[in-house]
Image (tube, rainbow, N blue to C red; front, top):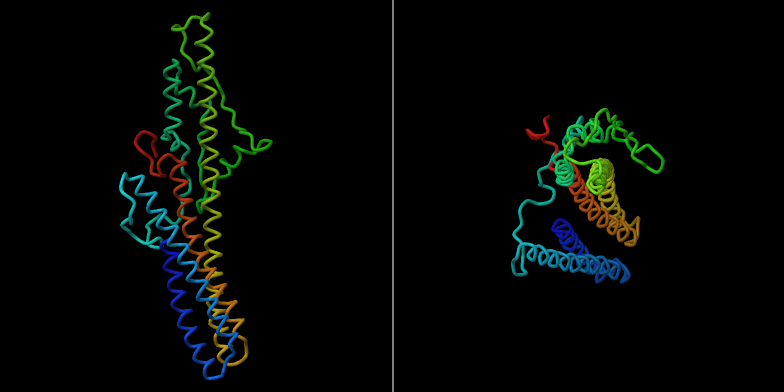
Length: 288
């Protein structure tokens, strides 16, 4: 929002300057009153956008203040959106063992252990040991293959070569305990499947958002060039102010769209971080 507000204010200043010039030309009889009205529309549109962004900014600040147990008010700013440090590319070859740090998987493993399960056997049976990423931060073929079944059904089947639950402590007649063990195992498997799917979705989102941002940058550059050309044509009498109006509107929209695309790319990185259970730096527990 701060970046969008900065863009909008800069656009408003530029449009106000253009409006003053158009009004001067109208008084001199070189342009029509229609050109003035069209220039005014650009100014009013930018001013209206600023009011809306300021409203959303204040509401977001109030929400953040509530989360921080503070009274509603402005939130101190750090770095700008475009200055936020982040890894431009998700590294290739991320091991699936990273997902073992996820709180939901650790919770289900703890429940299995409480049910007298051999957690190492359960991991070997239900936790695929693969690379999650390929070059450029894309999801690996191995990760894609996990969901190649009908309607994206999980297609990994571990080889269960030894019993998961230790014997001797539970009587064969205690059906409730056995049912609880089976339930814990099913939930564990489903949790792993959900974790891998979230990683897959996050990697797809990041790659596509990055591609979208790159295209939006090209669009923003093109619209700025078109606006400069439209102004030249207008000053030279080769175009009406309607052409300038259209180019200005497109340039403003493209700049705001680029700010949103940059935000979406960063949010996609956050989504990957969350899906992996804490980024892609392996801890001592998971290994590298």
